[in-house]
Amino acid sequence: MLGDLFEPKSFAGLFGSAPSIALATLGLTLFAEGKGYASTEACSMTLGAAAFLVYASAVSGLMMRRKWPAKLAGSVSLLLWFAVAFGLWFAVLR
Image (cartoon, rainbow, N blue to C red; front, side, top):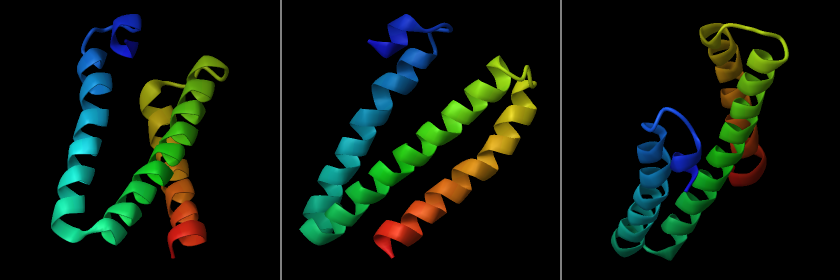
């Protein structure tokens, strides 16, 4: 549904496949490694998604409000994504 709302239509594949791949990976992990490991992986995916939300919000804000070029906004915000992801990992999973 999200892929139909945005242009270019190549986003449809991104929004359509990522959840399916994540669920398939969790299913395979559950059968191969057990509930404990799959639970840790699911938590890691959730924290990574939260970090990506911060990254996407930062890129959007820098490009829309500050009129930064996409390469600069993405590069600077990538550092923020790593900081949030590792901070969440340290606070929750470690």
